[in-house]
Each structure stands twice: as structure tokens, then as C-alpha cells.
Image 1 (cartoon, rainbow, N blue to C red):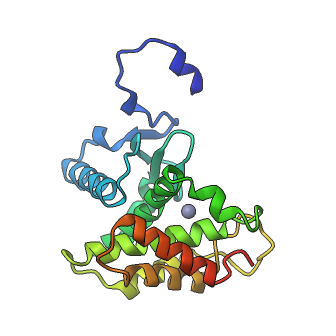
Image 2: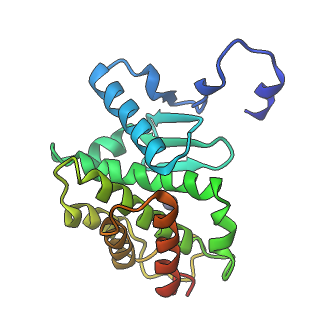
Image 3: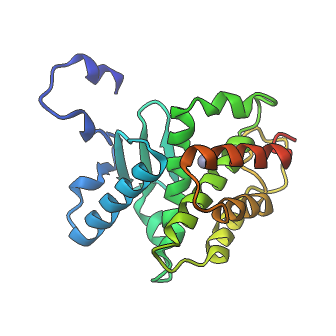
Length: 210
Ligand SMILES: [Zn+2]
């Protein structure tokens, strides 16, 4: 929707989420969820010192993603509910959003190119670094909430890609994602910049590009 920029509109820029099945969490009718998502958005923005253009829900999307062009985080509603099940497991879904927020942080700090440098065909270093940052966020969150690091790390294990390491979109094997998340989780009480540097050191050391 780049053309929309040319038209004069009274709409605030933040409306966005203009995919066919998308809407901004701000427009969510269910007040409980709206509040949950909005407080989560501000928590993530504060922790990573970033600002999304929008936090979107999608009725068709079967995962979650960060859009570098629009600076929007989007999560499928069904996917969110699935990851947040059984009830009480909402931190798993939050950790996935933290991973997407981490991509916004990486973009803001120009880390995407840097992390890809050694092997431009793999996104794995970026993904494992985002897992590390998501771990850092959840570790920070665990100071106020009851969060089991292993339970959430398992979600990253399950989201890992299979053995086809030649795939240039490879996100990392389950075990690699599990460990990266856990390492980040245990890195507590550092600011986001230090956390990120520790994450870069960690993923380099694990040969994320091989
Ligand atoms: Zn990712």
C-alpha cells in the first residue's frame, strides 16, 4: 500500500494493518484481549527501546512475523490462541511476539546485514539472535511473572526447522533455537544493547552461519 502515502488522509499513520484479514489490536472488541495486547506492545517497546508502527492481528495468518518495510508486528489470532494453550501458557505466545519485536530492534540497529555478513544466504544468525533477545525479554519478565524458562524454550525447540540445512531460510534446528533462547533468558539485568551484544557473541560462537 505504498501508494496510500501519496494521498492526503486524516487517518493517523498508525492505523495500518491493511492486509485483507488484518486489524490493529487497538480496534479489538474484546476488551480483555485488547488490554493484554496493548500492554504487551508497550512492554516490548520499552524493553527493546523501539516503537512499532502497528501491532496487528490477522484472521488468516498461521504464524507471526515482523515486516521490515512497514515496521509492523503481526500475529495470527488462531496461532496466538494455539500457542497460548493450555490456559496459563500465555507466556509461550508472548515469547513468540518478543522474537518478532527483536527483529524490529535488529532493524533499528542495522544488525540484519551485519548478522548475515558471513553467509548472505542464511537467515539463521538473525533468527538465533532474535531467539536470544526474546529469551532476554522473557528473563526480564520472569522477575515479575511466574515463567518457566524450560517450557517456553521448548516452544522454540518445536518451532525449529528440520535437517535441510541447505535451505537459505533455515531458522535453526530446534535444539539451536532452544539453547539460544535459554542463553538469553539467563542473561538478566543488562540493558538491551548489552543483551544484543552478548547475543551476537553467542550466535557467532555457535557458528550460526554454518
Ligand atoms: Zn524470526
